[in-house]
Length: 141
Image (cartoon, rainbow, N blue to C red; front, side, top):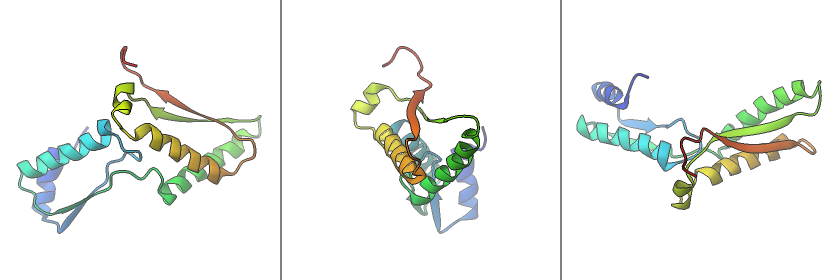
């Protein structure tokens, strides 16, 4: 799991860019993932004196290219699976504790919107699909 933000900030500082574009690899924004990654970057940038303009891409769950990429991939495999029956498309996302969602975390609603846009773009009549959440840890609801 390398490089960590601390290592990258040092390397970027040596490079001395005019601007950094921070792209967390989480299409949907969550305080538990995206925000913690951004805060980690900012903490390390401050610690190492990296002072350049930083643009942050907080989410891209509804970006046209993101939706199209998923649509193309799903369509390809849906066509293959259709040869042996009627496929069900399962959109799997990481779960969050209900307490995080109740505090206003937009992750679940952004996952649902991503799925809606993909299903619309697939335009498959009577598509059998569902969203499922996984990776619950412990007794938290």
